[in-house]
Length: 385
Ligand code: MG
Image 1 (spheres, rainbow, N blue to C red):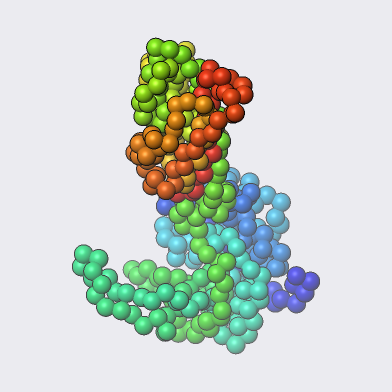
Image 2 (cartoon, rainbow, N blue to C red):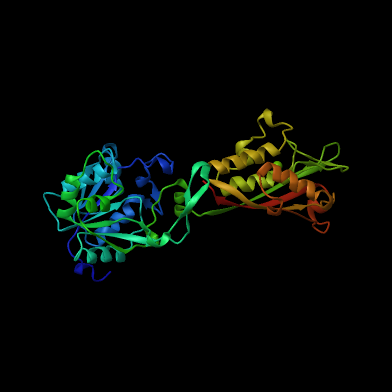
C-alpha cells in the first residue's frame, strides 16, 4: 500500500496466549509453521506494515523464546504475559499500553493469519465516528436450532445475524475503561461485548472471508501443505514353476507362480510403494526388510494395510489407485472383480476408485518371454486429518 502513512496512528494487541490444543501437533498452534512461517508472524507482519506501533504480543509465560524467534526482525514489538482467559490476556495487553496511551488499538487473534490491509483501513475509518468497530460477515447458510439428541428443534433467522471476526478496533481510552470495569465473575465472548456492556457503541464494518480462524489440524493440513499427494510404485517378480501366483491378494491358477521372500504379490508391492512414496516414507524394503525372517511367505496385504495406516497417521487418506500389470499370461480380466474387491477391503476404497489394468509387451523383454510379471501403480492421497 502506497498510502499507509495516511492511516491514523494506532497500536495493536495480538493475542497468542492460548495453548492451541485443538490443532494437534507439538507446538502451540500460533507458533506452528503455516505457509512457510510461524502462524503468528503472518498477521503481525501485516500490522507492522500498516504502521501499528507498538504491537503487544500477549503470550503464555513459557512461550516467550518461541515468540521472539517467530517474530524476529519485526520492530516495535512488546511481549506481555497472558492471563487465565482470553479476556484477561487482552486486559494485560491493554494495561501494557497505558504508558503509551495510544488513541486507538486493534485487538487481533494470532490464529487469523490472513489480515487484509483494507480491513484495517475500514476499521480505523469507523473509529472516527464510533468508539468501537468490528469486522462482521453475513450468514449465508440457513440455520437450525439443535434440540435433544441432535434433533432439529426449530430454525433461526439468519438475516439479523453476523459472524464476527478480529481484529476488533477501539478508541483506547474507551476499551481500557470497559475492561477495568468488567464484572470479573462473567466471561465475555469478545472485546466488543466488553465495550457494549460498558455503554459503548460498536460499528459493524464488512469483514473478509480471508480472516478465517485456523482452528483444527485440518486447517493446517489443507492450508500449509498440498491437499493432494501422488505416489508411484514399480515392482517385478520372477515367474517360476512350483510357486503360487498371488496378484492383488487373490490366488490365481497358473502353471507358474511368482517367487520372492513374501508371497511375491507384485501388484500389492507396487501399490504399497506408491502409498509410501506419496507420504515420503521410504519404500516397502524399509518397512519390511527381506532380511527379516518374519516376512518369509508373508501375505502382502499386511504391507499395504500398514502403508495405508502410515498415510492416515501423516494426515492423508487414499483417493484412488491406478494399477497396470505387465505380463503375457495369465489373463487378468477374469480375475479383475475379485482383485478390486480384495484391494477395496485392504484400503477402504470404493471399487470405482480402484483401477486394475493389464497389458502385454508384445512378447518383448522378460515379461514378453514369460520370465516375470511387472506392476506399476499410481495412487492419489488427499488430506484427511
Ligand atoms: Mg516385490
